Length: 102
Image (cartoon, rainbow, N blue to C red; front, side, top):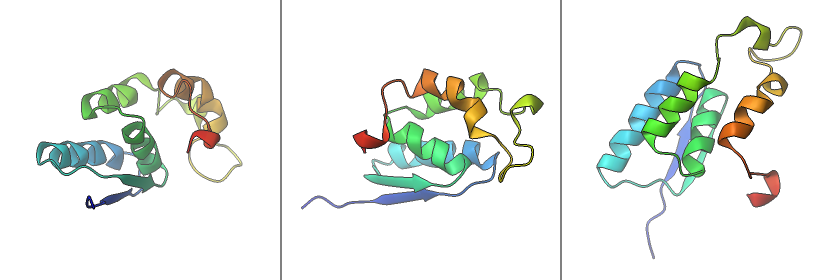
């Protein structure tokens, strides 16, 4: 039976970039996580990885997504970012994904 490796990534904004570097090192050493999860920024990186994005493509996601745009912040809601305001940006990277596909 093949060994299964899980990967859990924490939240924390800029840590997303560190997570991408971590994934790059894993892949360079032929360590392939088969289960992934995360919270906040770690959840985004985990979702990108699970959808088959390379570390370079993940970096492009963060370059193209206006993370620091003030109008996308969550005022009066839990968390820093309002995920409802990011839906259009996310659809560009997660085109045909749904909860049912899990």
